[in-house]
Image 1 (cartoon, helix red, strand yellow):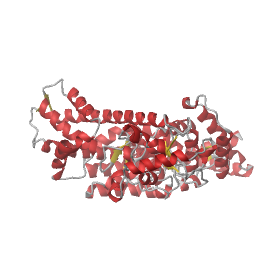
Image 2 (cartoon, helix red, strand yellow):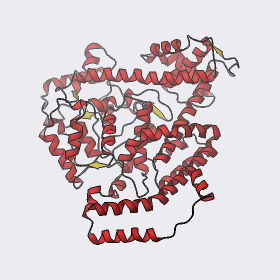
Image 3 (cartoon, helix red, strand yellow):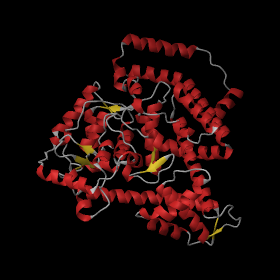
Image 4 (tube, helix red, strand yellow):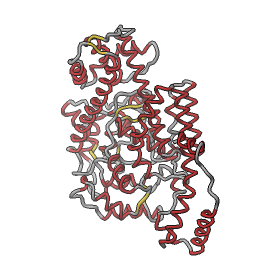
Length: 537
């Protein structure tokens, strides 16, 4: 057994080197394309972010199924980048949205690169797409794609800042810098556009910003907090240059995300106080509309049709529909700061659980007993009792896949929802929800429930007798599996212990290959070849 492992280790060492060298060369070529398309200065900024991007992506990358080159495919890359931008910035990237749990439904992670519609960006997208299609992306190339997308988003922010100068009547910032009063005016215009989103570009963008500040920004309930945040940032100096203002605005964006997270937590706390049964993660529709009907609150007023298409409703008991708390928090009606690239929404707290599991397992799948051991060790699981129903269903998922549970699939996400119903959203089967944005849905039919509609649900709920048991929460459970990367899982190599079943004849063949490779004359790779390899790194 030990001999087999030694054979395999030697073979991997022999054959891994040319593959790794080839992948490094591809990464070098991609960076050259980034420099050619975006310019030297921006490519340097992207290169400076690579180490951090690799560090943040590492857990997820190592837990995804990879090909023989150690690279991931398109759907897995989309998943990893979606997770990354949520973790780093709280961005729900539009072109990286899962949409469903189905890997086949996912769009290419390179689509974001072409949003600028410039020839250079299209060429850059083609280069990444070719690498993805032919070889997949290793961790370094994935980090490069992530840093490039981040840089493009930041360049969009620069356009918004330039338009803010124009809207303030400052067409060329004076060389000594702006007064604190003018700087504050410009930054207020910027944050108005950032918070409420702008749907115009080009010359009309400045007019749109001014309109938002004059007419709409007061509809945002925390605008005064944003203004005080900017006022506090402009107290210290008399003059401000553009670079300094950009830094202040980046900090303001992060603080804005923190403010929105607090608002989301407040919504979550209020919904949990209205649960049909403690810890169920579900609120009866009649109780959901209660605060608006009885207290005149503005929250919890979305129409049933919007909630249904957004995947928020549990209608397994048709007489007593219920709102699933984590699905509601993730709905588009709770998003702000919409741009061409992303929106800032309530964070998916279940992502933290997945990050921990990926870091601990470093593999795409695990036995159900191991997953139960790890999940039960989470601080959030303290004092939790893992019922026989939960254990049985996790074992069924493992049986569905021949003994192990894939981490990145709909069935495990469904199990996590029932384990942490207050935290993990229910994963709907692909095609059963549309998840249109709140504004897009409003163009077709009313996204808000009127007073009569809410009152009808309140009356109907008073007469119904919902099932308030633990097993009733499994009414939406389905056996439909949708893997993030079906092909990757299909080609996933056996776990280490599976190699121990290799026949003795196979081991002898491996040993022969190892011995033969040791007798081959070694080519001198010093001098120019060695220098070339270093350049590729």
